Image (cartoon, rainbow, N blue to C red; front, side, top):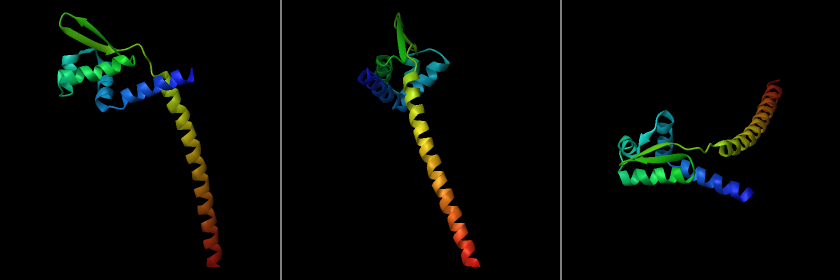
Amino acid sequence: MVQRLETRLDAAFAALSDPTRRGVLDQLGRSDASITALAERFDMTLTGMKKHVGVLVQVGLVTTEKVGRVRTCKLGPRRLDEEAAWLERHRQLWAARFDALDEVVAEMKQKEEADEHKRRR
């Protein structure tokens, strides 16, 4: 179960690691689009866009439907709940670490100010 989740996370984060694919998801969040329209929007070849869309389809973030000669893309059924939960756990971890660091810095600054005050006397 854990390995399957890690594999899904790896695939999703790999798909999201590319700015073009993130842009495609943003675009499809606004409206469905053909692969041709996406290729034009991102100023790339049809073949290049097909590869990007294929990666998104593979992880379930996009679905496509072919009607005649037009392949239309739309957001897929997969939500990013697991990825969001993973990010939130790590955000909390780092927030706690930075809060602890802030406390150490504040204590050091307070001690430094107290030492400076003693020296002035």
